[in-house]
Length: 103
Image (cartoon, rainbow, N blue to C red):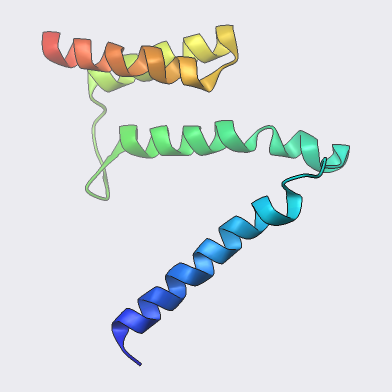
């Protein structure tokens, strides 16, 4: 089997798995016992991505850049006050860019 055929099959398989959740559960209301844990999935995903980006570089643990650390802190404060993750991006990224320019 060709490498490209295997990669195409893997791509189709992962796409099918991801789409199946939208197709199967798209028009339904989740039960309460499943809805409560699902509420923390998005914040956990964002935290893991931000943590990995902040604490690692090129697959190694790297010293934390002060501008990134301050941006993460600013984003954390904004999320705690507003409850909206998108506000963290709107505040955190300009904070990081400004501090990187200054420092």
